Image (cartoon, rainbow, N blue to C red; front, side, top):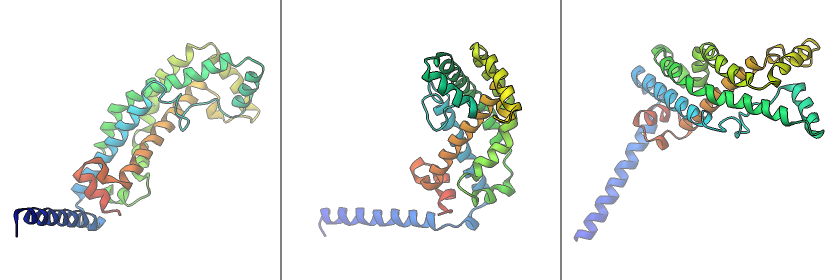
Length: 234
């Protein structure tokens, strides 16, 4: 065998070995994973998803420029705002909507420490059960551990952003009356609370989108533990 043939054969053998190794990794089942591996994979997925979501939403226009999470006025108030725009009176409405979304963009980066700390509260005994759940099981677990504390953290930031707009107080007056008439949900009758809730919704939505990507293509994230853990779910 000449040198060129030997090199070609060697490369072919390496390729087969690599392919076999990948197949073996994906051949693992959930029951083959140790609690340590399952928990480590979950923690890495949570951290990657959280930091990615924060990076996307915490940037300028992270909310305002993203149709999937953009915060608009709720229900009947949005209908009234659209009517105002038709009569050339939409300037103040647009200013309020802009302030609402800027408040969300300013608040999201403050979630980092809480989210990272929450990762450490993961119960090892629950890890495999969460992994075997739906596409957003990790995110749902994460939200249950952090949402109330994040709401308290976000509210002051959102309040400062919305209070700069004179229409914010008018929103609360009009929304309160609309809620009394059953035209608006009571929880949407306060602009600060409403924006805080929508900010949290947007954050966990983006984390869930990242979780889905990791579950569908763990190899693409260049992490051995993610490949091992989420590959076992294939």
